Length: 115
Image 1 (cartoon, helix red, strand yellow):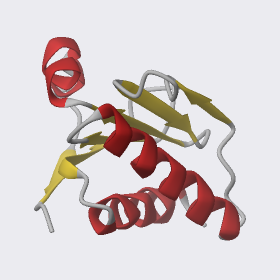
Image 2: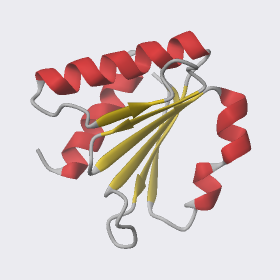
Image 3: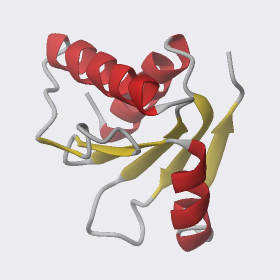
Image 4: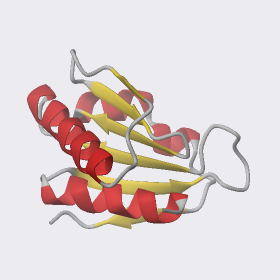
């Protein structure tokens, strides 16, 4: 599975579980960190944990297990690292505070409507 297809699959999984304000940042031309960031807003820490669980489970079933998960216990900013795709799941106030979309604002991006 290409990094782009993996990122789009993750976006779809997050949409199915009511993740909000989904944003896909394309980092391929400028960053050694990852090819894509998927950024998502959860309604609460519990929702963030549920979103991360779903993504980890479904991607593992598709033979794309996460390499690392951080922030799960607190659920305010859960980072799920798939090596070439990094998923950031935030509660609203933490997403606003850290502003990843502002930091990486010059990267190509695609917004997805809430389902």
